[in-house]
Length: 319
Image (tube, rainbow, N blue to C red; front, side, top):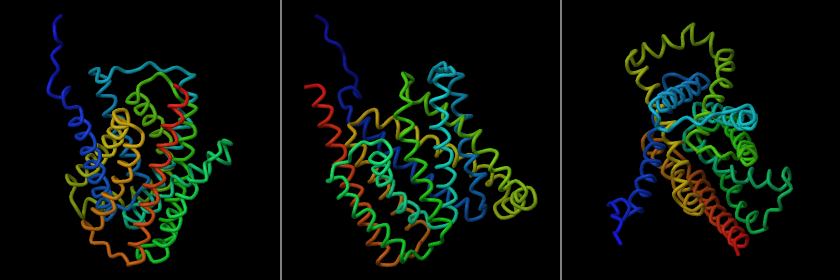
């Protein structure tokens, strides 16, 4: 009987998984830093959100053209279930960027730590799925931490705060619709189609809200500050980093258990908050720092408990 040769990566799959995590974190941190740098000289989040999606869509179309991956066929039934997901994705993406442009990156990510609270609320009160008391208790420090951080955040303004909260709600509904939109299509193709639909959703608001300002002085001011080459280069790369980090997040989820991915997602937020404070030199009060830490710890606790509950459910079904 011939032995099947196993390659180096086959012998050490943890190296591949570790590389996925590293690239996910790296691309996410670079995206957040470059994104904020763009907003410092070009404060037009609706337009930049469109660019994020546009670059990603072009990347998907080029990938399809060479068969990496092969484009999955789509029909009206699949389109009907993907449209609500894409609309929520678009709204959540734009409002996240409005918040990123309005306040410190670290503060936006602190507010977005509340997303599990909105997910739990939607599951309990909209879907009628009872949430264990242990999960609700684990969310208490998240709410407390965000409240503490918000009260003394030096960059606080209502536009940034409310936009981040709307983003949380939008991504919660995206999660709900995603569960209803489960298809046999692979995750790369699903994300590509969602990006295409979301681009068409984001385009009209960008033209209406920011179009006149962009034509009048937005583009010319940005070019005067950094030059045409850097301006175009920044927009291209921020779009690439946005698409690739989202794709890698999906690919990483496929390689690891939900618990590992959940903890990894929390650590990613810690990395982004930490690096943004260092890179931009954001001054934060002691209370904001403590509040952010409490919120992140609460999210970590929630993620661990939730993943364990889901694992127990799966084991119960297979038993």
